[in-house]
Amino acid sequence: MTQHRKITSVVAGKPDEGGRTADSVNPSRTDEVIAEVSFGTADTFVAAAEAAKQAQPAWAAIPAPVRGQAIAQIGRAVQQNKASLARIVTDEIGKPYGEALGEVQEIIDTCDFFLGEGRRLYGQTVPSEMPDKQLFTFRRPVGVAGVITAGNFPVAVPSWYIVPALLAGNTVVWKPAEYSPAASAAFHDLFVNGGGLPDGVFNIVHAGGPETFAGLERSLEQGLIDKIGFTGSSAVGREVGALVGRHLQSPCLELGGKNPMVVTPAADLDLAVEGALFAGFGTAGQRCTSLGTVIVHESVHAEFLTRFNAAVAAAAVGDPTGEVLMGPMMDAKFAERYEEYLDWIQPHHRVQAAQGRITADNPRDGFVGDPAAGLFYHPVVVDGVAPGDRIFDNETFGPLVGVTTYRDFDQAMQLANAPGYGLSSAIYTNDAREAFAFRDRISAGMVSVNNSTSGAEAHLPFGGNGKSGNGSRQSGIWVLDQFTRWQSMNWDYSGKLQKAQMDVAQL
Ligand code: UN1
Image (cartoon, rainbow, N blue to C red; front, side):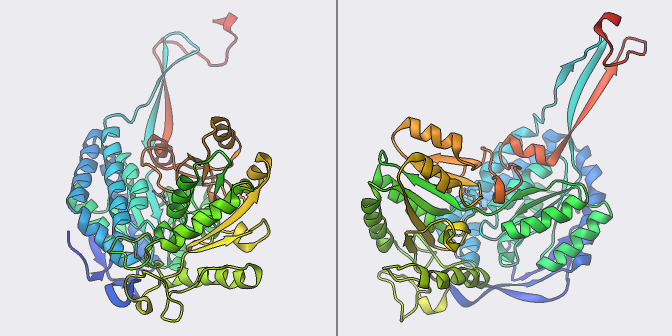
């Protein structure tokens, strides 16, 4: 795998120099430049969409089982480069190396799942209401898929879109996050070279938000993009949805979460603490599936809080190349937004432990690395949050977990659904009735019982409701409904004109 120092967009197999340049820096040591990226313009995006449109019919004409073989080869290439790709992820966004290995494994799992789908892509044969007539359904590729992704999962989440899109006969324009260009360039190389993809089948455009929106709008106007897959914030997802909707398309939107964890009196408290620690502070709280609020029964609240605070205080924070629970935040942009929430906490809540940025003046026991050089933050637990609080109602996307209490199950469910998101959720209980009642009443697309809110597996439907998305689902066979469209066919071999919806007596 080549690790690029200078990164450009790649359109129809050729580098595109684009416009402004920027450095991608290591958030653990912000003076270390990982790569220099040259960002494309709206024209770059349109050129990529044109290249993808042109390449699509020939790609779709390749038999699906053969496209499946290309996916198999991509999976093997990623497997062979697992450690080096994970290391780029760790260096570029500060994800602890163990988590980064898991992230790369998710690409391999996704390839493993879809390589076989190339030999299925089933349609149906359906009986007709008339004699001597047969009905069929077929999955057809949508055409060109535009994929816009976030940097917190710079390689796994893109594969959730790109692998099934390619397998189904679509070509792709990918706009990765601005702050993970090295990881996305390495991913693009592995896919194109590993899979032997023809020029134009998989194009990558490094660009900022305004250029992307302008390029996307023009591409939609010219009929060059047929489907958008977007992972990012609820706010930007709304804009993407509005733009794409004006062109009569429904995007696949995977947005934010304010994921609740209910801890009942029937819970194993140590297990719940372990789950809350990983869900709240893994990836420094920057997963869409990160834990937002623990909703704990008042009878076990004090005990849970004591154990949770102790676990948070003992957790290893620091250099993500080592064995830590939490590395730095991934980019200054996210750290700044997160600090606005921290500023809000001061006058509203009393937090006993240290919070904010880890520095020499605000140190943390057992910290590994150089606090002054990186975007390292204290993990924070805020007890007593409630609806109406900024940190209860909103995704904070940082290492912050709220705690609140409930008296009866109805109240727990009200609190769990109150923020209006609906991505992931968890309940800790050994009472099966509570677990199923929670599943039945939670608004979330994903439910964990006695497990963390994050850590989805690559072959189950992934996605949310409410502010978390538009009900679209990724992963497993379900995502094929995003990247294919059903076509029906009827074949009448009666030799006469038979009309549908006729009275049966007339036959
Ligand atoms: C995201 O944060 O966008 O379930 C996706 C998980 C991951 C995916 C998170 N496998 O935590």
